[in-house]
Image 1 (tube, rainbow, N blue to C red):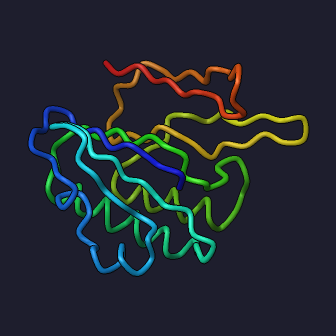
Image 2 (cartoon, rainbow, N blue to C red):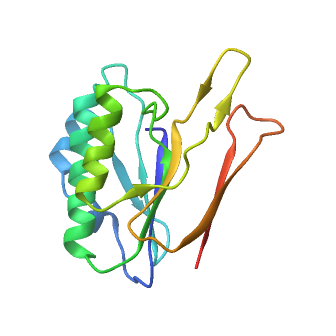
Length: 155
């Protein structure tokens, strides 16, 4: 996961320790870090690690989501970022990631490729939500980057 952003509707006073409780996991694996940006936003950032294993990633995401939904159960949540899970390819990792999200009532909103090259099309980044009233999503083709921008409209 290159990085993702958590947004909780109407929440004030959100701090890093509220959305990530696994300090020992963080120290050992250096894969999930959480910082306070303002009163409504918590940034969850993964530091790439050459020893990165998918199982550790899933456990870290599960800990973060568990802490967020334990503390902020009734809030609308938007998670956006590059998760480095190939969502267009049938794989164990894809199903494990989507099953984990589903266990927290989180759905993906982007289903088309967000990185297109001459040789491949991938969907690594996404916008994930725990509510249904999104008016749609758009993938904006890049001008200078190899990654497309993603946009959803919330109602």
